Length: 319
Figure 1 (cartoon, rainbow, N blue to C red):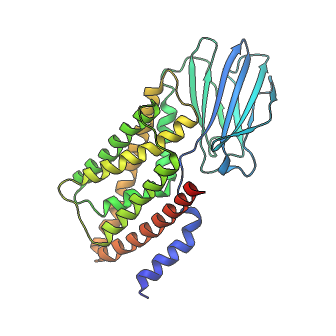
Figure 2: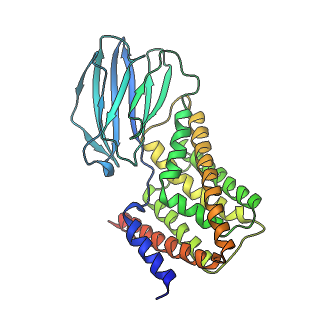
Figure 3: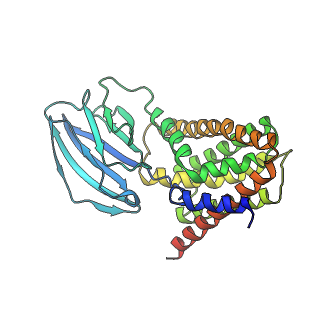
C-alpha cells in the first residue's frame, strides 16, 4: 500500500469522529409577550444533540413554569410560562449545556409586535435583550450562515473538492457564487411552501454529490468553461437541506426575507473565507510537485466520507 493511501487511511481513522456530516438543525427560543411582562415561550432543541439537556436561565426578576417536554420531529419542545416583575428588555437571557454544533436562534416579540432576533452558542451563551427597537434583527442569520458553513465538514469538503476541479480564481468565485445563488433559490421556494421534499432524501442526495466530486477529482478532470453549472445544480439540492431545517423551527415572521438574505450572505462569506485557505494549500502542492498526490488524497477522503454519509442517510430513509 502506498504512503499516500496509508496517510489517507490514517486521516480518516483519526478525524472520523469529527467528520460526521453536520446537519443544519439549530435550536430556537421563541418568546412572545402576551400581557405586560408576561410571556409564553417555546424552546426547541435538536434531539440528536441532547446529552445534558440545554436549559434557559431567565433573569432573577422572572418566575417560570415549564410543561413537560415532548418530541416534535427532530426536536424536543418545551413550553414555558414566564411572569416577570419588569420587562425582559435590558435584561440578560442565558442558555446552558449547548452542544458545540448547535446555535440557538432567539426570537422575541413584544406586545407592539416589534421583533428582536439574536443568536446564542457555546462561545456566547448569554444574550442581552436591547431596550430599543432592532432595525435589522436578521443579522443573527448572517452569523448563523457563517458558523454553519465553517463548522460543517460536509460543506468544507465540498468546497475543497470544487477547488480541485476549477481552474482560475475568477472561475472559482463564479462557481462559489453560483452555488450560493442556487441554494438561495430553493431555500426561498421551500420556506415559502412552493416546493417540498423529505429532508432525509435531500440529505442522501447531497451525500451523493460529494461522491460525484470524488470521482471527478480521481479522473483528474478540470472544468475551465462552465464550472458554475455543476455548482449551481448542487446548490439547488443543498438549499433544500437548509430550508427543511429553517421551516421546522418556524422562522416565518415579518422579516423572513431579510432572514433568508442574511443567512445566504453568511453562507457566501463562509465560502469566501475558505477559498484563500485552500488556495494556499493547493499552491503549495503545485510548488512542491505534489498536486496529483494531493488530489488523489482528497478524492479518497471525499469518496470515503461521501459513501459513509450516503449509506447512513439511506438507512435512515428505509428504517
